Length: 258
Image (cartoon, rainbow, N blue to C red; front, top):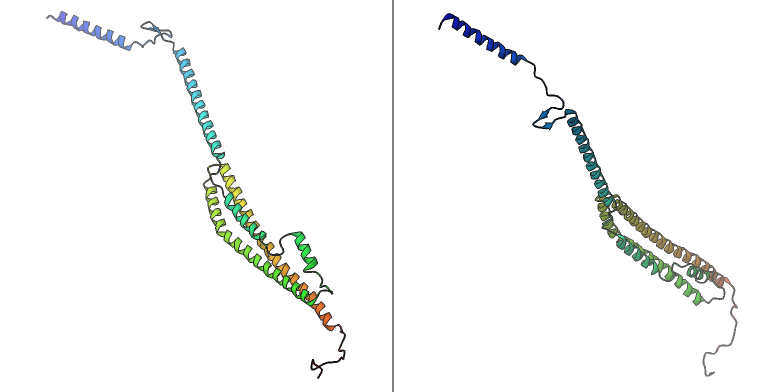
């Protein structure tokens, strides 16, 4: 190969290399906004708007789902708040009150009745009658003593009944406190609290019964003491009142007159 041929070959290779570099250095031209790819028109602006609309729709759906979840939770809470307490101590409390009332109703002799009390104080506990015989005075004193003993016995029976209710009250109180602490809603807590108040009312009723029975026994004892003092004055008056004295008369030692 001659020098001229080699020179032209070198020149040709250099020209090809320059052309390749120039093409590589040319800037990339983006397709137009409405470029077509295989017959499909691509609009970037429309695509972006569609994407934003889809995002907003998805966000709205998520918000609706969250709202429905909150409403469901609210309904569940309302259902819990409206759930009734599956425990009632009313029957036991009523039975305790009935036992105490029964004991009060079994009061001996003078009952808890205003008319009976007024009648007894007009007769048995009234002023000692001047015209009454000694036997009648003794009978009245014995009747008053029996009333006092009966009142004391009644008071002790009521006390025993109230003491017997303590164990039942303790059991009910423990159960109600447990129900209150384990309440699933406001209604159950309220109902447990109401039953605890009912238990307190029953205990107050027992306390009232004890006070009434003790007061009755004490009143009978005081009334007996007052009546005994009045009867004592009447008996003393009779003892000190001068009688007819000794009247002399004929006495026979032997019935046949010998």
